[in-house]
Length: 294
Image 1 (tube, rainbow, N blue to C red):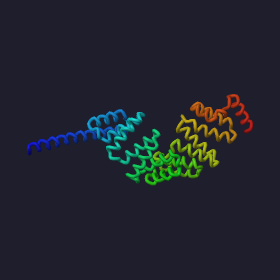
Image 2: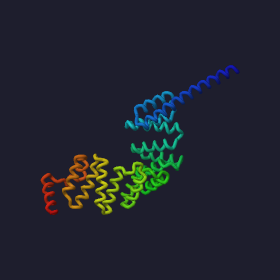
Image 3: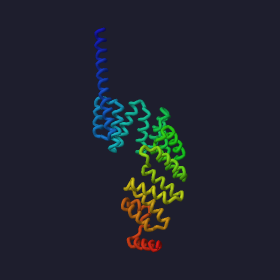
Image 4: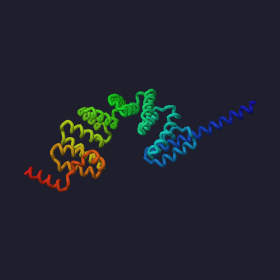
């Protein structure tokens, strides 16, 4: 009996050591995969995560990494399945719970996203990402006041999240609180790592300036948005609206023509094509404007 016990214990010990070695090997592969992922080398990262799962199917890091790799390739359902597994294996790591909620939200599984937000809050309330997810879910439900409160909770925990400030500014814009829009964007610019607003910020600032009766400052921000995102038609249409209000039909028409080149369906569907002048009308309008200046 003693000999049998020794044999059985020895087998279990050997199996444990073997499994432990496989687990450690999987962890090493996952760490390397994460490094490749941070460098944007997705193919190499995905290969390493797959190799890690061959060694150990319960490596939550490998499932997490493979989820992000699939998400990057727009294979969203596969990505979500692996992230669900990662959450389960990690015993509901709050960061993975939040990431799963973000994924659900992006594929319009709003109720599932809301559930993950609630789970994350029950696990850890002092994590900014959790409050951002809550705010995003509330915003999707059109509950903008509660969303605003959630975003402010996130910013109290991590003040330098510029993207969240953009969302706050958009809510203030919807509420026509233009001074609050500008104040929010001022803080976003001060705390931005690159010291400047993204395109979205310049668009929001321009719209706020326009509504506050400061058209020339608005045009400056729309022009900045044009430089940052030359493929966007929207800044040109905003400038066209100001030019029309100023009586500058020729200037408005030139902006609309450029917007049509970039996004004709948008211009036609929004009705802006009605303000486009023919070459003859444009020439006549410019001539008339020049005569006024003499």
